Image (tube, rainbow, N blue to C red; front, side, top):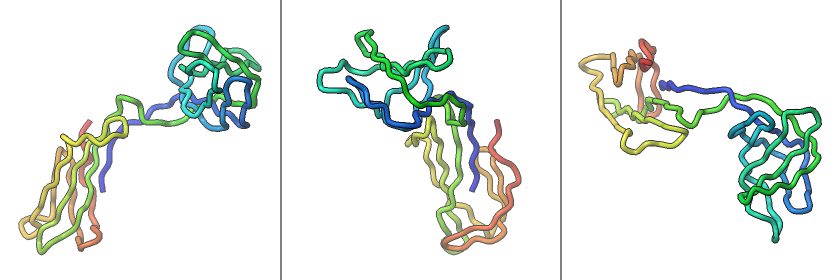
Length: 170
């Protein structure tokens, strides 16, 4: 019904074709940027496959220069670098400290409707911040929760029609 949260623009590394390396295989997928320094951009290594005798993986690194290789950085400070087809880009993503609020319609019984409230942090449900509330439409067609207000136009067992009066405050 109502949702509010924040998104940020993050750097990503898009590997366009599988890199079949001697010690590590880097699948074609998108890797989220996790850091940078003066010489390199660093990306999450999720999905990278290490060979049987290869060191554990800490990150992917790409130098800030044209035609740089993709390097697998190990937990022991070593690296294995490979040429490959990739692009660096930006995309919208939920930030790790993002916070989102939602109202969810759960149905109607008689004159009462049930609304679920959920808070999410970094895309994970926060169980301590889940709540369900009932509103009696025979007393008012306006409902409010945590600063969000709605005018209920029609409510049935499986759906609701409403007008948003005010979203969650900042």
